[in-house]
View 1 (tube, helix red, strand yellow):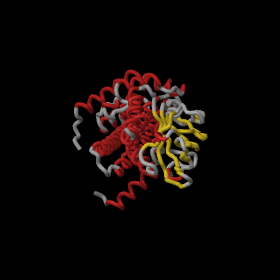
View 2 (cartoon, helix red, strand yellow):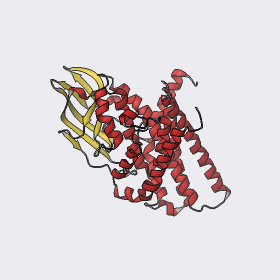
View 3 (cartoon, helix red, strand yellow):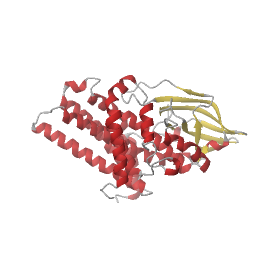
View 4 (tube, one colour):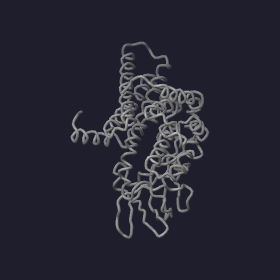
Length: 375
């Protein structure tokens, strides 16, 4: 991996930093307090190409690669992790559509996601009783003479109340025979879809998170994305890439916490210096691990799953610990609900949960080590 950024990566990072500095950071606390979905800011990100960083130019993306995407998410998350996760999920949904979709599916939908015509897309995998265990989902799609009938409930769906398109995973039945899990493209405006109330979360309040209920929703035969019964494999591939996004978001959170702490006029004691030094070193280690995973994905490596899990595990754990230590170093004022450090501490917690919990990452890493060895 080349440690020197190329001109494209530098340009993408510059674009993200400018939007973060000028538009996101100044209103992060107010946006969080109001639970305000960042429609205007998402349009700015789209105008800068950041809603499709690794998507081909003919579909409206920047075609800048996965390393550039990671750098952009880090910069946005430093200013507001809630905006970063919305951006990250949109990029992930766009990539899945680009990679597995037919020419008609991709040309119809992906440009709407990269341009900002759709404020976002949603990745509908988790269910009330099936989060980490995606194979245990209950949502079903049954083939009809005119397409598919979709029924079930999805939980913890990012941007679900605002998305222009849903990617929905479901157990599939054809003529009474189970076909396994398949993936479907679902227009968010279809009859039979009920959007739940926004979840009252610990943090990232400006990220919309809802449940979605599908009550005999009729979708056409062209709604199937990828091959029948191959949806679980697509989900696992998408999650590998998604973990790079959450690792990048976590690094941005840690960067933001360190910056706020160093601005706070900390004392120059050895204890404080040691804490800052160690936190900075751990953040940089997580950053390099994440950029390596991004580089492996960008290089079309068939084996970046372990590296993505390692990056997500380490970066999310580091973000939580750095945010906690920074609050402790700054003192009581940083514990006030509307203090930027308190916000970052709340925002950090979910990074250990979504895109696979820290416990799941450890299982993925261990299994890959047993299967392939250390190298």
